[in-house]
Length: 323
Image (cartoon, rainbow, N blue to C red; front, side):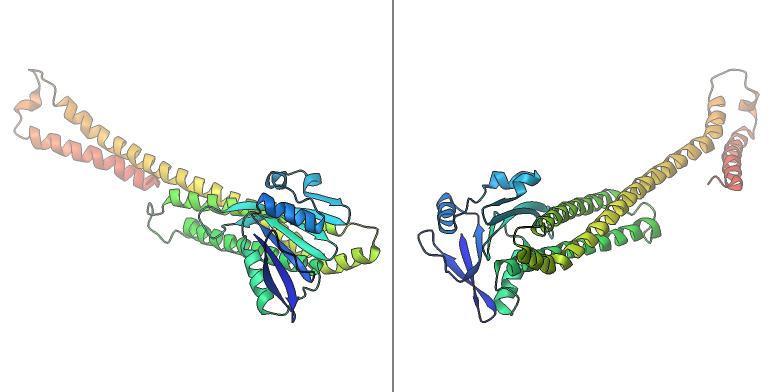
């Protein structure tokens, strides 16, 4: 699907484009979503480009993601998709700056694209050139990553409270669910860090010295704030990764602590019931000569010995603070 965004009264109006149609001359942003081979040939022929394939977009080499052909800059970044679901993922998105037009190529619809497109249709935003549209898209992407990291931070605070404050009764906390939540937060943080690294490389590529010093100067002004945000979020993502590792270690430690407590209870129970078992075993032996068998108080005496032999170890453990 091809959508051209045309500037009108300070906003961007979407115009669907058919493969045999014409891209409006005043279009500043051309959005190519899951293109068919026919649509790829149409865009290549109209704009004089060679858009990368989906397989080429997946490559991780910097030279395959950031390069220049003629007057066109090809930049591929990794974006997060499905962050609000139980199975978040990532998808590559290619940005191509040719002249003062922006071409985006993607095989998914990350939330920042929907947010920016809706905002551009309703409000007056800087969008007179492809560079300004790219800056707006990158700003929306960085804002989305910031929201994801804020949510991860909140969930980690909640997990820390559940693990350490222990408002619930001992044994009531579902550690399996806690580990699953830690794993989901770790996956989101890792994907956010990967996305931020790719965006930082993209911004560095845009701001590199070029033959057109005026263009480089405008790039530096337009993307400087975004670069600072990306650096700050990268540091925050690293902090969250360390915090997640701490929460994971704490969770495993609490699991070991509860297991040790259970084993301790069984060990104490075995020690407490060992003397009564010994007494019962002695008087359960089938010997003819056992004087206690003929005592009138033999039975209650044996029961008393069992009770005393069980209470004494328990009292000793409590006095030593082992229970």
